[in-house]
Structure formats: structure tokens, C-alpha cells
Amino acid sequence: MKSNAKMENMELDFFTRELFDELFAPGTASSGVTKEEIAEMRNTLDKLKQTELTQPILDFFSRLLEFRRRQSILPQDLGLSNENLLVLAKHHEEIDEHEVTVGGRINRALPIVEVANERVKDYLLRKEAEAASGIELWDQIQENVVRIMDKLNMSEEEWHSYKGQLKYAIDSVDTLSRVIDLPSSAIKDVLRVTQSYRMRVTPYYASLIQPGRVNDPVLIQCVPTGEMVDNVGEEIPPVAADHSPARLIDQFYPRVITIKSTNMCAMYCTHCLRIAHIGKKDRIYCNEAYREALDYIRKNSFIRDVLITGGDVFALPNNMIKFLLDELDSIDHVTVKRLGTRIPVTAPMRLDNELLDILSKSNDKKPIRVVTQINTAQEITPVSREGFKKLSSRVMTVMNQAVLLKGINDTRVKMWKLCETIHEAYVRPYYVFNCSYRNTQFAHLRVPVEIGRDIIESMYGNISGDAIPRYICTAGGKVPMHRDNVVGHKDSAVTLRKPWSGEEVDYPDANPEIYRKTDFAFARYKD
Ligand SMILES: *Cc1c(COP(=O)(O)O)cnc(C)c1O
Ligand code: SF4
Image 1: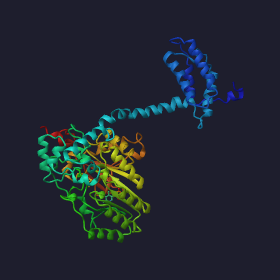
Image 2: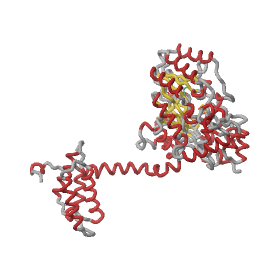
Image 3: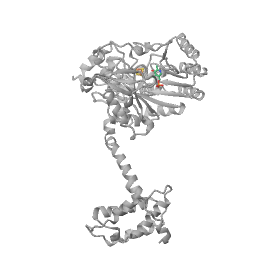
Image 4: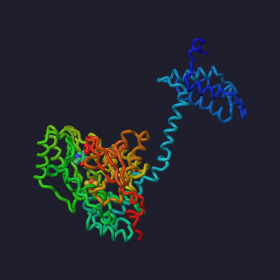
């Protein structure tokens, strides 16, 4: 027993007082205590006086509370005095580096944790069933790989090479129907759509499609459906033309520009914003085009950040990528670079050592960020994760720009799962784009502004801050769509305020009726 002077110092903090009040509140025991229990509790208390660990003390008080709550058994019934417990409580406070009291832990900290955990319980229960990642689906995907290799007559070696992936890319309805089981009406319609829009799916990306799922989130990103031609509406010219001050260049901001270095992609997305630019066939640009683009950058000393995009910059051969990076590195005012590519999820075999070394060397001179596009956790497999791991060790960071798409990532569970899965695959969520209104081709995949906002806002306080993307749209520049920025609602549009100018713009929203339709994309084909 400690000295009296010390006992007087034993002021209890609010939460420990609360704990003691509850423990010692008068009452009648609803059941008896056994001798063994008494002996055990006294024994434990004696031992705990010497402990240097906080957890056993916490456990001891928790057991006392349980006795009190379940059977109305008071500490006295267990042969434990108020004074002894007080000493033990103080001991906890003394050994804890931050002088946290036992009452503070039990009555304050732990309930806060419990309430926090409660907020994600439903997500944890649903995330695998509602939004399985390619890692979780890996067994099924490997079965798909075997099936697809067989149908396409591809060798193991060809499968694992980028060249092989391109050589056997699925670009005809004929091949598609051999590889993926689709209703005959769907096949017919895909044939109709591919008269106007290009289809190209790498065998690897096709292997991520889960058989038997009508609107598989990978399938509807890569195989065009009837809506793409049927959704005709008011044609809005592509943004690119408004913002191209020089050949291959897009500029809207004072210091950031993009070079559209190629129109090639390993795979063509059904929701591609650059659908007009992608065109009908792969084009290699002439040296003069690159020279003019680089001259523009060289002459404009405002330019600080250059984003080489496409198409997909990794669709270019290594020597071209090296050439462009070397040129940029030789321009003093260009101090940071970005590369836009979706290839790590559509054809991860492309990330060969030669490319990685080129990136490393240029990154040593001035930072490179790789900007990718992943829209569903299903696109992260052990193979793409390995690719991102290698990439992220060679460049400053890898960031994701997802597009908010109906049936793909338009629920809280799907979006959270996407962000967590890419975070765990060395990729940082950067933007979530509200899918553009400009291209009517994919109006059926648009999601209303507010649904996206609610999903993104639901992440705050529930997911690591650096796994929360910013929600934006393209409306003459990238405009944030967080609550403060949406300054008005009209019938079918929201009014957004541009942070850099205060200018207000109307942004047509997704049509709620179309959004509510469940028979979209492949769900429209019954037989
Ligand atoms: C997206 C984009 C950029 C880059 O914008 P950040 O907000 O810096 O990511 C720059 N220029 C154009 C034309 C763009 O479309
Ligand atoms: S990878 Fe990008 S540029 Fe290429 S088709 Fe997809 S969205 Fe368009």
C-alpha cells in the first residue's frame, strides 16, 4: 500500500471516476461468485501491481465490468477493495507513456474505435462479393487464361509478351464470340457497332472478364454495345480542338500542357473521352510533328509540367519514349513530367526492364509521375500489381484517374474497394472523373453528379486520406465537384464554379431516367 500523501494525489480523471462509479454502484448480485473466482481475481490483482504492461490491467477492469454488468457482482463480492483498485488504476496511468488512464481507455477510446469500426462493417462484409479484385478472382482468371490461349492458339511465351498480346488482340466479332460467351443478339449488335467504333481487347484484359456475368465491369469497358451508335444526340465537338495551340499539344492551364504523342492504345475503352482522336487505325506520327510540339514547349518558358499522353504513351516503342523524355529533360523550364498510360492494366507485360530503366534514368533528372486509369478492383491482378510495384519503385509516384461509370464503380462499396485495392497495389487514387456529357456514345454509362459526390464524400474519415481521390469533371478545365463548388442546380444541369476564375459554368448532368435503367449494355440482349 502506498503512503497517504500519495493516496491523496490519486485524483481520478472523469472517465476513471465514471468507471469506478459504475463498478461500485450499489446493487444486489443476480448470481453468486465462486470461491475459485474470488481467489483468481485477488491473485491477478496482486500480480498486476508489478506488471509493466497496460493490457493486462485493462483486461482486468474489463472483467470487473463484465461481472458488474452481467451478474451485478461488485468488486467487494470478489474481495477487491476500492483502494486496491485505485492503486491499480494509477499504476496503469504511470506506466503508460502518455499517462492515459484506464477509464479513458475503456470508457472513451475503445468506444470511439467501436463506433468507427461500425461505420465500415457493412463494407467489410460486402466488399468481396460486390467488388472482388482480380487478386481475389485469380483462380477463375487463370482458368480463363487457359481457355483463351487455347481458343486463340497462343503459346505461353506469346501470352507473356506485349507483342503477343497485340498480335492476338481481339478486334473482330468473330474472335470475340470464340473467346467470350455472348448471346447471339449481342454478337450481332457488336458487329453493327464496330462498323463505327473500334474494338481491340488484349487477351490478357479479356481474361479478367468473369464468365456468366451479364454486365461484367471489365466486359462493358472494352466491348462496345448498341447504345454507342443509338445514343445519338446533339453532337458536341471534341474538347481537344479548342485547346490545341500547337501540333500534338493541348493547353488549357498556364503551366501544364499535354502532348498527345500517339493515337494507339493496347485496348480501346468504350468510355474513351478521346474517342474521336483515337480514330480508326493506329498511326505513327512523323518526326516533324514531335519536333513542332517540342519546339512549342521549348519556346514557352511558362511551361513547367509536361504530360505525355495519347492514346497511351506506353504504346510507343521504348526508343520513342526515351527520345521524348530526353528532350524534355534538356529543357530547363520543364521541371516535372507525367506519362499517361492504361497499359499496366490492359497489357502489363509491356513493362519490360528496358522501359523501366529509361523511366528510372529520366526520373533521376526530373520527377516522373505515371498517371493510369483503373476503374474497378477487378483490374488489379497479381500481374498488374507486380507491374505497378516495379513502376512505382522507378518513378516518383503512380496515380490513378478513374472514370465514374455505371455498373462499374458507382456504389460506395465498389468505389471504396477500388481505391483500397489500387492503394495496396502501389497506386495512389488521384481523380475520379464524372463521365463526360460531350460524347453521347457513352451516355448510358454516365452517373449523376450527386451520386458520385456522395460516394466520394463517404470516404472521408473512413479510408486513409491518401487513398481518397478528388471528384472532378471536365468542363473547360478540370472543375472540382465537391459540395462547395456546385453552386446551383437546374433541370438537367448543375452550375459549377471554376476555382481559378470564379466563372460559373453549366454542366449537364446524367439523365436520371437513363441512369435508373437496369437493362443497359449487355443486359439488353436476351438471346
Ligand atoms: C488533365 C489535363 C491537364 C492536367 O491537369 P491536372 O489537374 O494537373 O492533373 C493538363 N492539361 C490538359 C489539357 C488536361 O486535360
Ligand atoms: S486507354 Fe485512354 S486513350 Fe486509350 S481508349 Fe482507353 S480511355 Fe481512351
